[in-house]
Image 1 (cartoon, rainbow, N blue to C red):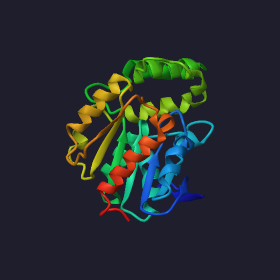
Image 2: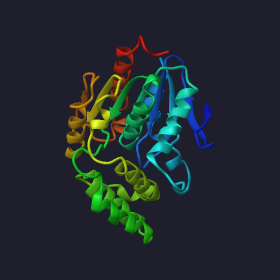
Image 3: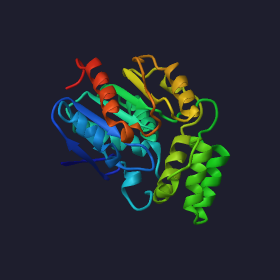
Image 4: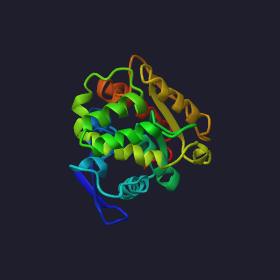
Length: 260
């Protein structure tokens, strides 16, 4: 089932809706779409109403003009407001940054939050010179080069196998990176976040993502016990959906008195 809400700028935002029970809203990562979390959602739907937002940045052939983090937040809040909340918010990678900013904007909508390796800018810009070179490559008609820079120098992925299949997402991914970089450097903005939060990470994920999660953990005032997925990396929603679903269930149970 698909539900639709109207964002602040009048744009209709779609989301896939399945299951019944307390609501869980999932914000998918970059270089993908809501279908990437289908297996996790299916394993949660026996107990929960699981809603996967279709981020407008990745829902069209090309990024919409004027994309910003504020637009992403407006879209998430539009979907959240049509659900019976407060709800559990789940974000993965850049989707986890969107989730953080959404909870910061409207904390009363969310009973709890699970963040899977958000690439927050701790002490230096997210992309810096590398992001500028990725943008130049994209503008020069070299999406493969732009995506390679994103993976090698921004994500700092140790291996680049299979990266070519991500080329169609290059324009959206670079816009995604730029929206996150525009938030600035430092995590003080999250020090007053009044939402119980669990951090999830993969044992084999890039080291820079681990460091970012550790820095975020140090400032969140309502941090719940985190989880490390053994033998998994940054894509455990695909390679270990059962374990990811269990982590989300654990969070939902921990905040069960607050969810609808």
